[in-house]
Image (tube, rainbow, N blue to C red; front, side):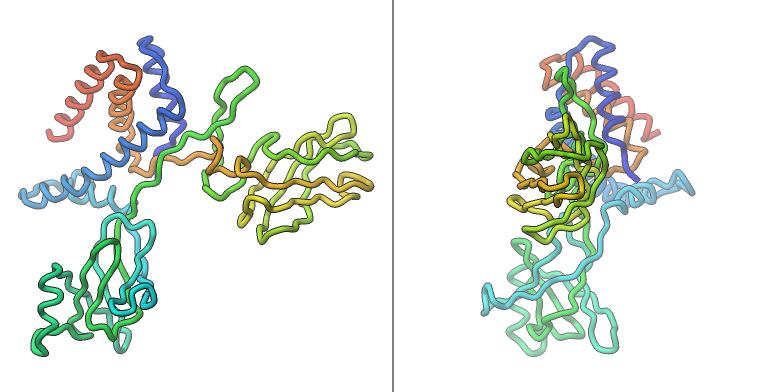
Length: 337
C-alpha cells in the first residue's frame, strides 16, 4: 500500500506545464515530496488526539478515528531492544531499532513467557523511586526512562527480552532517474537501496576485453573480493569488445572496491572481464533507484496539492502557491463536512 512516486511527479509536471508555470527538477521534487510526506505523517497524531476528545457518531468506512489509525498502521512496527553494558558500564541501557521515530508500548517477557508492560517515567521519578525498597521497580512492575534514543530499564536485572511497539519514520521520497542522450530524465522504477548496485544499461564499466564469441547475453559472473551474492550482468558487445556491462539483477552485499570477474570462456575465449566497483556504481551515490510515498493511497490528492504549493515557492510563482493553498483549504473543508 503506497502512492506511486512516478504518478505523483508526472501529475505535478502536467499541472505546472498546463498552466505554463515552470518546471520542477527531479531533485527539487524529491526534497519537496519528502517534506510533504513528513508533514502529512506528523499530522496523523495531532488529528487523532483531537478526534479522541470529540464524541464520534461515524460508523464503518466513515469512522474518522479508525481511518487515521489505518493510515498510521502503515508505519507501525514491532522490534526488540539490544542490551549494552559496555559503552557505559555503570549505566547500562537498551538500544532501539534504527528506524524508530515514535516510541509506543515497551514490554518485558518474564517468567512463563508472560508479557509485562513497563511504565514510562520522567527522569526525577525514575531515579527517586529506586531509593526505597517499597517503591523500587521489580520484574513484576518494571519501569523505564527514554532519553537520547536509549532505554534505561529498572530493575537492572532485566538484561534481555525487551520488546517495543513503535512508529517508523517515512523513508525519503525518491524519483530515481538516468539521463538520456538528449539530456532528458528517464524514470528508474527499480527500488532504491543505499547499498544496492545501480541497475540499467551501461551502469558498470569493465576493463576492455577482446571477445571472440560476439553475441551479447546475460551472464552470472564468477565473483571475488567480497561477500556479495546474486549479481547478474548483461554484456554489451561491440566489434568483439565488451564496452560496457549492465546490471540486470543487483544482488546484495557488494561494496566499493569489490572486484567482479567474468572468467575467460564465458563471453571470451581467453581474457576475463574485470570490473572494480566504484562509489558511483551504488544507489546512494547516484540518481538511480526510486522510493514510493509510504502514505495511504487516499492521501494522493492532498499530497499533489501540497507539492504544487511548495513548487510555487521553488519556481518563485506566488500564483501557484495561492491557487494550491486555496485547493488545500477547500479539500480540508470537504473532509470536515
